[in-house]
Image 1: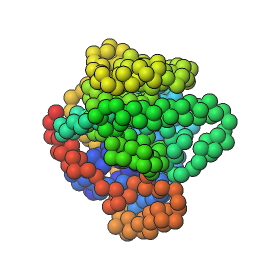
Image 2 (image 1 turned 90 degrees about the vertical axis):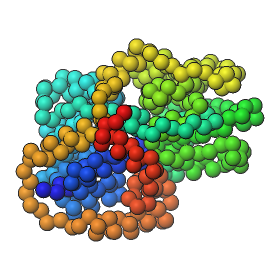
Image 3 (image 1 turned 135 degrees about the vertical axis):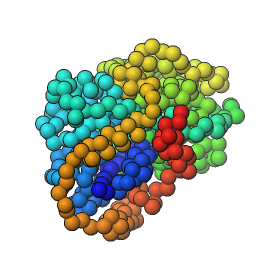
Length: 408
């Protein structure tokens, strides 16, 4: 039987890389796979009648079950190493829809424990596969290092991907303090870029957050010319692996830098963000153990010129990676997820449904894509994937080959 599978890649520059690799593995196993986004998700489920729907947020469970009642609903988290108190198990309990999910592909034992504490042991529904993002580190071709310093953007509140202005965020007045802090951080970054261009031989590569608009940085070329680039690639780790060092605010990207053995400088202490992290996301404070944390702009500039060494062998970080992401592990997390999905489908029975061919659904979607892109005025392609428009980099062919053969 040729299984029809829809993968919902919710956020383009977070989800599409691993979704594409998973899709190719499933296709090689004989499945038909369609990668959708919010724009065409409903149409794909209603008209194509998939046997399985792979989602990455708990909030999509109810809609998926309503639109595709006979399909297997599978959660493959987009953020699978979240703190226990606000992870997927918490959201299932809050929404009361754990009964509607057929399979959860967990990143690590931490979230398996969280699910079992709330819902009891369920070996059929709960499977630990590992962190799929780390496959892009483990199976990528060796990077060509460049003479660039990478800036990790995290300025979505002031540079939203869909052109919404900052006042959209401030309509919730509770966001004022965070908004001010992010503005301070952005100014620090611009001042630092000015210092790097004027005082070092390094170039600068800025990687906007997946919720940012790369177009928002267009004026930076007027200021710094070809010494600065704005990266718009799909995944963090291939970009990070080419940088001499990384500079940004504490986030899960620091963990990928740790595995890549790239030195990281945090600017949180300069803006007081470290105190906010301690108050609102205490688990992230451990990230400061692997970053260099200057307390003044002058110290930050000196660190850039000194070319610091990467962190390594930090027990707290290593323990976290093992418990939350099953790292290190043999084989591929994405391939293990694919094998688990195939096992579920092969052990299930499905009713016959008449369905539209996927070519027809994709053709209709081109109309909606161009309508949203040309008339919507919202930078639609920044966030929403379209097959045939968004081209995958050539190295993905090598990554897929390595994953399929599990060659380290």
